[in-house]
Image 1 (cartoon, rainbow, N blue to C red):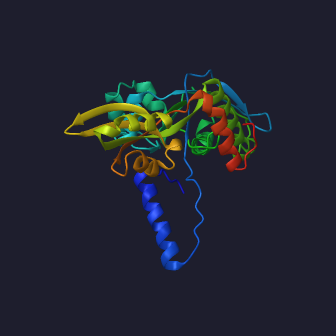
Image 2: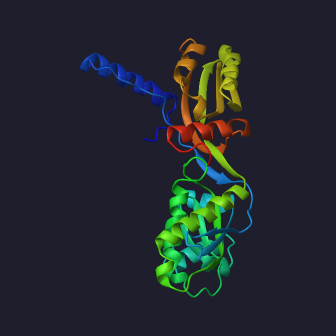
Image 3: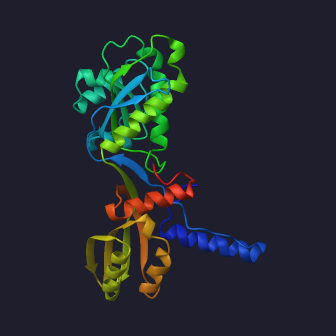
Length: 295
């Protein structure tokens, strides 16, 4: 499953593991927790064509980063997720509040896992028959992005144009899904597809004299000190740490503070995986998932 293990979670697991060993006499095989990354884009792409296997249908999709305001409105539940089937006045009002114009509001078709899909096509006769399939394909790619089949987030996709075969039999799911996937994947590449890694913000409390030790520890884990407060012999440190580097955190914290340091999880967020590490991380995830080396 998805385990984002923080210091406490790990300690908790050690306790449970020992209990199984002593009470049940069973050997426990543990492996490093699986870390779930996210995929997104860094800039706007041109509209990229995806063609169906029979070469008779084309979809032109462009992708850009979803702006923070709108993304946060989805995350906080102010804007509900889901496909937009019919005119929804409540949603329209909310979008207008967020600065959306009438056209954009009418073109919004789907809000899915922090991504949105717009239909910007004009007067396409058969769009009604294929739009649900297009959205199916959009959601499939959002569940498993092209870089490492990790979930996508914070993207705005716009269907700019379509060319469809006259005959419905030649524009079924077997034609639409691969074409839309090809278009989205191509557009993500042109939009600087990047991997985001999960980070956690921890509040760490240690006696003053371990301050130097903690600065070193946080640094050794690609971490960043956000804030340090000191009063009556205690240092309170707020640090941002990549989850990938937090394996063994509780032991390291205990070791570096003679058992006197405590840390608690304050927040979780995603940020770009450093470019120097990205290729390696993608390769390892693809290996673990049994995917081919190249995307």
